[in-house]
Image 1 (cartoon, rainbow, N blue to C red):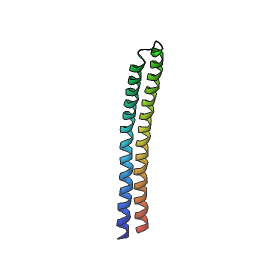
Image 2: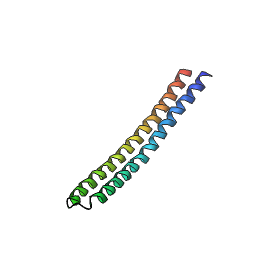
Image 3: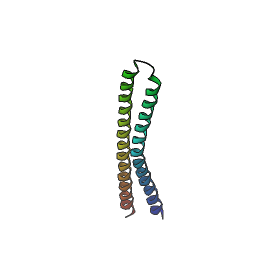
Image 4: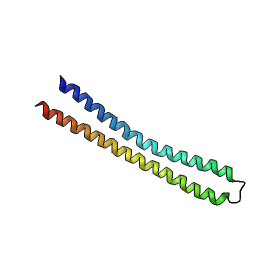
Length: 100
């Protein structure tokens, strides 16, 4: 009986890991898009200034970098999710050995 309960716990851990892994890549591009949108809004505000052009370019670059960071974070999230799965599987193996 006890062993079955522990199996279910491991399954939950595994599923949580998978969910986090899936969320990661979704968050990355979303953050990237937000960065781009902010860049465009600032662009509009600065149109009236002659210096606006230069600042725009720099901000655009910064926002682009934020977008890339978001994607990297997404990939890290995926890796964490995979680690979670591995840990879940290891846990199941250990429980199996204890049961014998």
